[in-house]
Image (cartoon, one colour):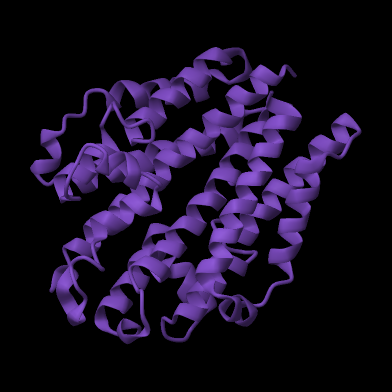
Length: 319
């Protein structure tokens, strides 16, 4: 397979996954902002506890946003992350870039997969900013999640299990691991900067919203029949091998896909070593050791290592 084709498939999947993750982050921020007491409950200051600022930080869009905006108001953040053409990481831009990548490799995709993605783009460009003012944000976010899940399901159900499929899935899990770590880090480090608010009403609602953002509420209560605690949720979202959006599960997929490519091409490169090293670190980790190290330090270290894996994948296969 040409490296150009592999790169298009890899980034097609990454941008579709990024669009879904942005929708999930906005969903959590919207739900939390509507809770009784808002951001000032339990004595938390507005500057320390702002759902809309946190979603900008979690998605890595804070710098770009504040370059052209003064305050992270609901309307401005939603528009910037959902429909703003000038933001290369908005949901609109992600789906447009994904479609452009797909169009470049249409022969590598099935007709069903291309038509699904193309229809998503056509429906998206008909969406207007004013619709969010009429209370339609939740409908839009549900639609984004539905369309991205349709894309993922279509890829799994219709594509041949060849190199193209491997690069498509590789992009999905590299992006998902990065997003999961960012959401966890923002919840624990930015929204709860000290211990005095842990265990309060805001803390409970925020952890509940976090689980919802991962579509993991029922899964968590099935696995942990105890109360919501930072330790249990962190363990579930970092170390669980059964939870498909956990860091360990994402790295297991990344490592497995890279090993398949290594066997196919008869060579092991730096990306394979780094992915295997990171997966082993997660697989044999204990949550107590992670908290002793510091959850924020662990997550920022993971994000940096996952980015190195992505960079080395580009060097090995996509250049």
